Structures are given as C-alpha cells and as structure tokens.
Length: 155
Ligand code: TYD
Image 1: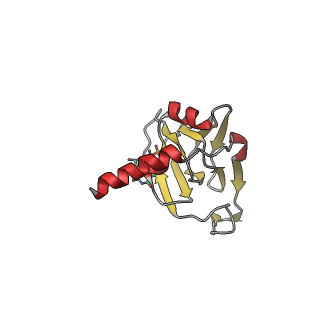
Image 2: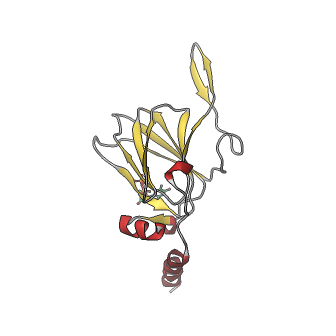
Image 3: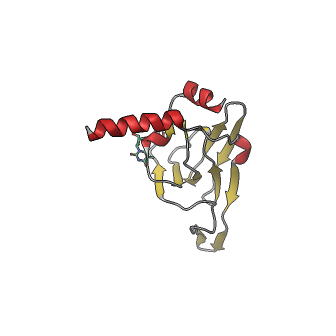
C-alpha cells in the first residue's frame, strides 16, 4: 500500500513539475587548478569552492565497451560536474532546440551540466573512466528517460 502511494505521488510530481528552461549555453567547462611537480599532478575539488553546487553523490563509469553510449536522459533538478578521470569521451547536450558537444579528456577540465537538458555520453576511449559529481542523491523520479516526453516538457 505504502509503495503504491509513493508511486502515485512520484507520477503526480512528474506531471506537475516543469522541466527547467535551461539551454545548452548554460553548460560550461570548469577548469580546476592543477598542482604539478616532476612526480606528477594533483587536482583538488572542495565543496563550496570549485564547482557551483554542493556534492551529495559521486559515481563513475568504467569498463565501457567500445561504441557504447551512456546517459540518454534528462533531469528535473540534478546538476552534475563530469570529467574524464582517465581517457576521453564526448558529452552531447541537447535542450530540444540546440545541441552542443563537449570533448572531455583531462581530469582537471570538467563539464558543468545544468538541470533540464538531455545528455548522451559517447565515443569512450578504451579504458576511460567518467567521474560524475552530483548535486543530489539518486532519485529515479528526477529522471526523464523518454526523448519524446523530454521534447514535450521543454515546449
Ligand atoms: P543511469 O543513470 O541510467 O546510467 P547512465 O546515465 O550512466 O547511462 O543508471 C544506470 C543504472 O544504475 C540504473 O539502473 C540506475 C542505477 N543507478 C543507481 O542505482 N544509483 C545511481 O546513483 C546511479 C547514477 C545509477
């Protein structure tokens, strides 16, 4: 009973909630400083200092088979900072009108993705690792996983 009530509440929330009106031009590359020495580099990320949201969750994608695509969804509220901890990949963001491609290949140069945008992660190099810092804990009801629904919500 409790589960059904929660599911109904999630459906209602998604029906009522508007997708953010952000465009692809609201996404930006953020460079984090690098401390270099002859023995290598170190990059430090601190909440409230380096990226424009508090980090509530970190996850990473790895062992991605050649030619695979990740993402393929939008978020109502979630903001993310994405970077290549190793290797490289492309992030294609789409606001329903414009598309923009960001090539990520350095651990200290990441992409800030604002809410309300469709994103696809493609062209992973062999052995690449995609690190994601997220503004909220995991919540499936924050996802829009259907592209037609996404387009409807953006108009
Ligand atoms: P998904 O967000 O669709 O992955 P991607 O955008 O990288 O393609 O998530 C894949 C699966 O992992 C899905 O079943 C949900 C689950 N998942 C969690 O349980 N917690 C999380 O924090 C994330 C990001 C995903």
